[in-house]
Image (cartoon, rainbow, N blue to C red; front, side):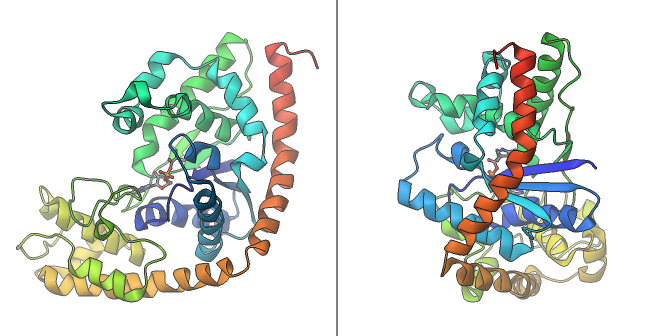
Length: 333
Ligand code: TYM
């Protein structure tokens, strides 16, 4: 069976972007039953920028609660925290020696995150995509569901696999396929439709957090930026209207319908009205999740148990693969 892997950083709370761009697809692929699914909290990636230890621990467990509350079933999927499966970091080192400085330097996420101060950024932040390639390839995963912003990192994963196979003259690592699908592969800020919705945006009103209550969700959508024109009858009418397009995309993704289908129904409506519809839909879909998350967080021993069990199951896959890698590379065993 084809194998699916994906990860999310516990570097803050979950946003509607993470939910629509990633988690809903994780759940769909799990429930399709056609793939073996492995989902990961990538705590080692989170510490590439400073994380307060207590906050990191809390965020990792809360992220796990978010996965569970959204429908990830630890019986159907393997649910893990990255640092509990040491083969990720071990293969990550090998890949640090396969990937090239130039490849890393071209990553737009590196350029955005290191900004003006590349000299002061951590070495881990620079090497981030090599560890990400290891996350995926230590399972020989073939499919990786992600939002649009991870596309370049997944191309690099293919480059790492290709170079490793070529350098060692083996056909060992698969060339993974990104799965970037649906109306919400890039959910934008509610305050600026040209900027990605992000957990690190200092303005809380720019995003919906999965922990927001119904009032906060409704208020943020009511205040979301739009333009004065009514909704068009088809997607073509959203051209050059990033804020309007974003809200329609979010609605379509939450409703599980196509953008054209939504617009055929909403054509001619004003955004004042549509934003209320959107807020109602979002509250209906998201408040059961936030309720379940806070219930799960009341006693985190259940979460810790699930993650220990997930790590055990994961290592049944990763230990033999890492053994073969060490053998291929020439490490004495
Ligand atoms: P992260 O933690 O930034 O985001 C987790 C997932 O959410 C998606 N996403 C979005 N999708 C649509 N609109 C948005 N505004 C939005 N914001 C975030 C991301 O595309 C991602 O799918 N490098 C990864 C974590 C990672 C990983 C991996 C992913 C580490 N190893 C291996 C896949 C496979 C990251 O920082 O995601």
